[in-house]
Image 1 (spheres, rainbow, N blue to C red):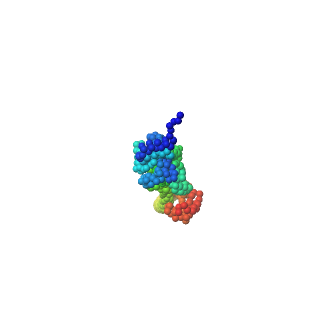
Image 2 (cartoon, rainbow, N blue to C red):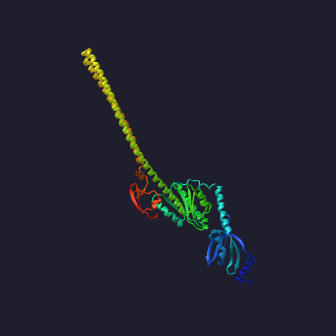
Image 3 (cartoon, rainbow, N blue to C red):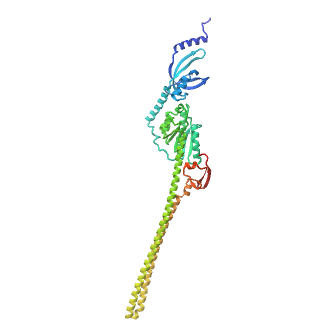
Amino acid sequence: MKKKHITLTEYLNNISKVINGNFSYSEWVKCEVSNINIVGGHYYIEIIDIDQFGNRTRNQTAIIYKSQINNTIKKFEETTNLKFSKGMKVLFKLKANFTAKYSLSFIVDDIDPNFTLGEMEAKINKIRKEIYNKNYQNLNKNLITPNHFTNVAVISPSKAAGLADFMSESNFLSNNGLCNFDFYAATFEGDKAKDSIVKAFTEVNNKINSGIEYDALVIIRGGGSKMSLHYLNEYQIAGCVCRTKIPVFSGIGHEVDKVLIDEYANFSFDTPSKVIEYISNTIFNNYQRSIDNINRINYQIENIIENSKRRTALNIQSINNRIDTLIINKKNETNIIVENISNNIIQIVNYLRNKAKENLISIENNSLYQLNNKKIETNTLINKILDDVEKSITYKYKDFTGLIKEIKEYSPEKNLKRGYAIIKSENKIVNSVEKLKKLNKITILLEDGEIEIEIKELK
């Protein structure tokens, strides 16, 4: 028994009449761009719906024909200054179309640029509010910005142009033992950017918790489209920046490109090159201050030595003068005593001679005995004075020896043993980067000798 039937083409044509008849108008539809394929100049765009839990609920292909590119995509990019790309939330003006040959398709007649900009700004404001509610906004900003750098962690895309600019200077610092840099690679664009950057932050924080002492964490990448930078505007990334226990330096994009990382970092720079320039300048300024301090200490040491020499010479001269004066005074006193004694003896002798010559010998012996006692007393006094003078000179010598030892502790040789280095050119100290740039060859003085180096990379 034959059944009434129609062909597949007729069936699809009937469906086409129903759909095209009832959906001949265009309607604004909110969706997210999942993927873009360009075939023959036509854009085939996979659009999806995402629920509140981040799960895909629907997907469909929308078409922008080559003839409509100027009125849709180019107009959108010129208005928003964004490159039309996957991951965008968009408002398409769609019209359903069904044919027997191509089945159901959606045609994009227009794109609302204000919706996409609004969605991006709304997302950023939502993250800002959540950071504020948790009181995270100033955690990293309030950390003390380091005034010297010896060990720095760096998060960056592995092959970014900004990383190459950064490393051209950081390699010079690390190769010369001035600062160490540990690099942690992460993806900065696409759906995996958030998880990749958070993972890099986790690795750095684990190193810090294990005892590695970083002065700062630098996060850098070169410039790019506004949409590519928008991948960095995620709550998890901003939260990592806020909660990191060391100062975070950001150097992302060009001067006009700002992301949430810049808002919450301890220090924000316009480009990766400016980050490494700041670190380098800080290190070299500290080095220059060290050289200036060493020169100032050497100058002070020389002054101390000269002043000590003068004071010592004056003290010795003063002691000698006092000794001479004491000796002269004692001699004078002794002479007077002797003279007095002699006069007394003569008077006694004359007196006794007149009275009794027999007592002469006894009187003379008594007089000689007194004279010897006076001489002994005089010699004892002189010896005591000389002992006091010798002790005073000994104490002064010990003070002077201690001072010389203390001075030697701050000598250039001691500073070289502590790990400092001195840069010279033609026996003159080089104390600035500008002077260094003008030189072709320098001599670096270290503890165990000196080495000559030709300078090329600073030119």
